[in-house]
Length: 118
Image 1 (cartoon, rainbow, N blue to C red):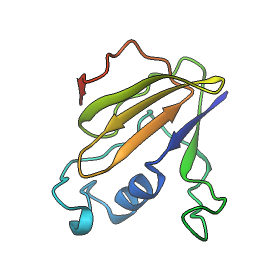
Image 2 (spheres, rainbow, N blue to C red; image 1 turned 30 degrees about the vertical axis):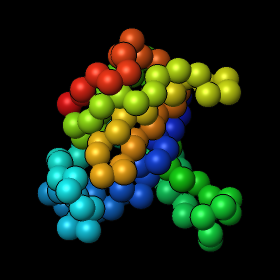
Image 3 (tube, rainbow, N blue to C red; image 1 turned 180 degrees about the vertical axis):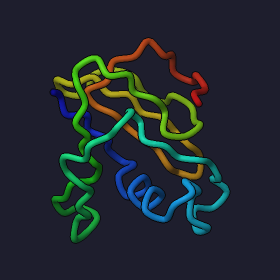
Image 4 (cartoon, one colour; image 1 turned 60 degrees about the horizontal axis):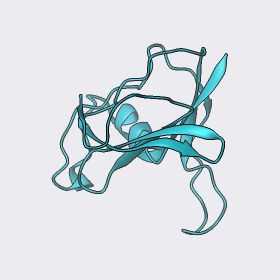
């Protein structure tokens, strides 16, 4: 098994899945989309843990248990804004508009920057 780290989207994805229907909350501005888990049959290993302040330590994402080679899908429509290494891990980031970005690691992809995903 391998842990898939979903960063930057933890609070959003956790909130969306807990409010049901997959719709973004009304305060999300112009961003309106259906959100889904990025992997089939997700198992949360570590939940989102908000930092006390913007610069404090915290866990700003969620970790999902997924076997090596598991396909990772965009949780909502967006555009690839980053695909490459960060430190020693491959990362893929998708902008969903309205300032919402989901990032996934370790995820390798042949998607080009600017590529629309669904």
